[in-house]
Image (cartoon, rainbow, N blue to C red; front, side):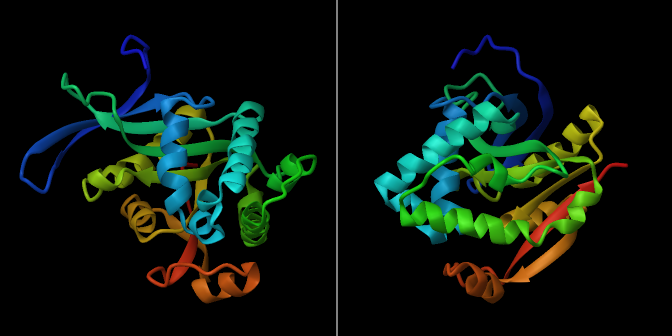
Length: 239
């Protein structure tokens, strides 16, 4: 990663770490490319921890993970992806290190994830489970279709060592700023963790659909972490 690459910086903020020290942080744009630091962060932290991915077991089967990486590589090449990261904003050795990641995608109301993968073949049970779960979740989001175009959240995750610093709240905030900057009227996402739900609520996002964990378990055949009572499809408009 080159420190000379110019990137759009969306916000700068400070947080207090558990030891009382202050850390300076910023949210900036980064590209998502096969095997670059953003891609690796997504695979290392989001895939093993996000509720649906975790329940599917995709990260624990090398063959399933290989199929998943191939899918994501094709996905990022075929469709525009907007990634923002949180990193340290100083001159230390950790400056630029990714501490948190948010990935969104401009989506039209006619787009279907199902259409994108129709010509791809997946053999692992884990990938078949996760793709079926994605189809089930998509069936709940019909109200988002009233917008011709919107930013759809494809993932938000914070490094375990840097949680409770307000990073997720800031990453969600920047999603709205991107909407304003690009003239897109709405951003939305399935929030499948308490942290992301709280971050969205802190930014005045509304809940379009809330699905009890037990209902999704019955429909998808997956078993989710019992600490999460429900999945929330949340959104924020800027029009």
